[in-house]
Length: 302
Ligand code: URA
Image (cartoon, rainbow, N blue to C red; front, side):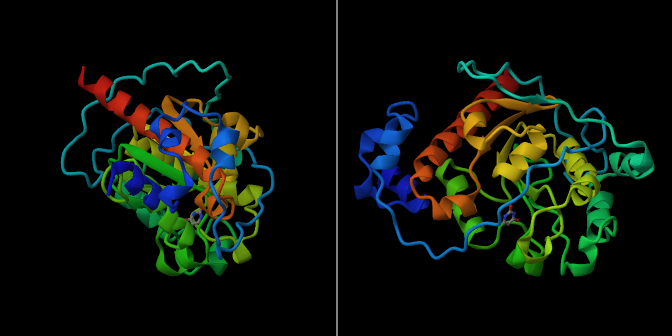
């Protein structure tokens, strides 16, 4: 199977539906043209929940560092600062992680000092919000604690709640295929986490208080993993991480930052299951992830 056909099949597209030149280069053809050339396919995936506007993320303000007691066998070399974002004419968001509100500062301080194992225990036993009463499992995340790429989604769904692992349902299969299309794999150079660690009942919208309580946990994961790149998928994760109300479409195709970590945004796979034409755009986002990851890796070797 050619690389192109492999990519298409990984993305769930039939090769005949797309002209080869449309996939040769992400910039080669205007998005509407790509979208128009992909035929719709049947899709029985349930629509993703509609989420409210993202509340402001409130996470501890500490410098990224490698946890000495993280379970990784060797200490990672200090990574150089990310190269400046590629200029593409549009504004990019550089979010600053804000300090926690006074009332929560002692919990935040505790979390900000946790090593990986302690953080895992803290998530597993968390009772900071009401979601602990309805969850089956708190979902810490899955993958390499020293991942190069951190994928951040929204919140566990029913299957994730049952299994205790993020993205294991239909959307998760598509996410795995998307990662495979750029040569990445869950558990290898990738860690997958969510903004919320517990499932909102009935997949309802996360409440601001839930995000407030969960945010320090995600912030500490980011600090400990210290990925080269974050891939924020779906409106909720994107707007929460970047602290913006801007629509996903306005944020795509640019390099953003959360503190010093570059962030690429993309569509949520559950959305893509319902919106086939956007798979072509999703492919552009994935190529941006791949390009930036390669550039950042190469820069770290210089
Ligand atoms: N959607 C998410 O955002 N996260 C999951 O873990 C599963 C579905």
